[in-house]
Amino acid sequence: MHLKHHAIAALALFATAFAHPAFADSWTVDKDKSSLSFEVAQGEETVTGSFSTWDAAIDFDPAAPEQAKIKATIETGSAATGSAQFDGMLPGPDFFDAAGFPQAVFQTDKVTALGGDAYQAEGTLTIRDISQPVTLDFTLTITGDTAVADGTATISRTAHKVGSSVATSTLADAVKVKLDLTATR
Image (cartoon, rainbow, N blue to C red; front, side, top):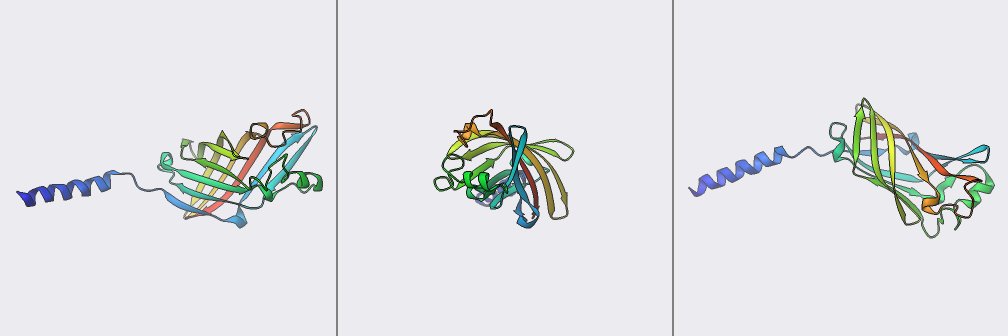
């Protein structure tokens, strides 16, 4: 009788192991083929820039997007626009305050398939220790062990107190963030 209970327990453990969903694939960002950029309206013009230093930890399986876990870490002091005036202001205390808050973090564990190659990640963006919800819409193409994702999100700079001394009539509140990512598993 004792052996029968062990056999049943082993069978139950075996069945349970295969009843759990598979783990998502882990992806490594190809930094040479990826970019994280932003644009914001300033009067009649548009200021564009990018972050040169960032990385992401990505666990994602397109067959089970609800199991995704994504965390992107951005070095705020790496923001550059190509304009000496803006590039001097961005790391300063009124904008990113890179000395006090050297990193911004986007984190999500809620990804939804929208059909075809379209997805939506609902997460939290933390800048200057202020966390706000943000939605990243992206497309994803996987060929072999290479994934290419293109995504956009719109964030409120004033909600994160970025450039809070600059009126929204001068520099718009809405900042469009664009992700062009290539990763390998």
